[in-house]
Length: 301
Image 1 (tube, one colour):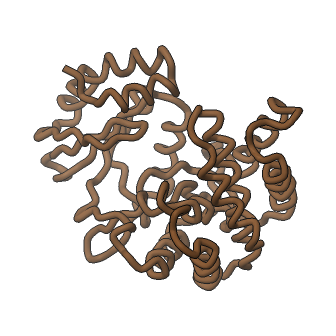
Image 2: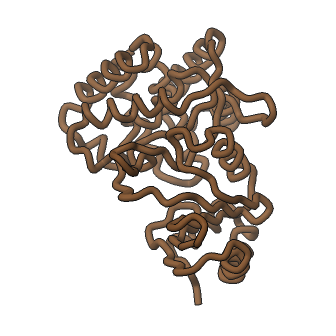
């Protein structure tokens, strides 16, 4: 019996091909092995999955936990390393991990409501900003985390593959690629960042403390972090009335809380919005969303 939905399985195969199919076939056996190895009980698979399998469980030593399984690959290894580096400071605690199996055992954040539960966008933006400032730390040297520059290589790849203009608006891609080079050449204070800190990855924990989950783990200047927040919530953000005003208010709050120039925040947010469109195109997904957000952000630089 399959543990996952056809939609989840299609996504895994689209990204990982034959390797993904083999992993899906092995998933029930892998889960059972880990249940025995980590003394788990009361396994409750989570139905709403993106690119990893998740299940709630219980362990005598830790209580309620989350089992996270993914196709073993570099991004998952980087997440494990990031969780170890952040060490529970504003981020979910990693209890156990086996990168060779693509397996993570995490504390369960309760009550677990995400940041979208806060209806006031000004308040949710302030919460996110304060969490960013809490979790950032100097970039460690013992593990080679990808850098903001590595991520921005996506522009070069796109332009090389589309020398005569591809499907994305050429002016936006060129503006973003050039701006990224400029920003990278002057960036300072390299920090270990979450990399994907948006509303769905910020959960309410005990004593009304907000906790981040699912870090990508990327090294860059602080302003690079805000791009994910400025793109969310997906897919509804682009349908909000007065979107430019919303984004401008967000930038004002972020600049105030993080003590970063608003232009710097807007610039990186624009770059990351276009970069998200490049990635979406590469993954065979709809790229229009990132472009729509980027068009608004470009006006705020």
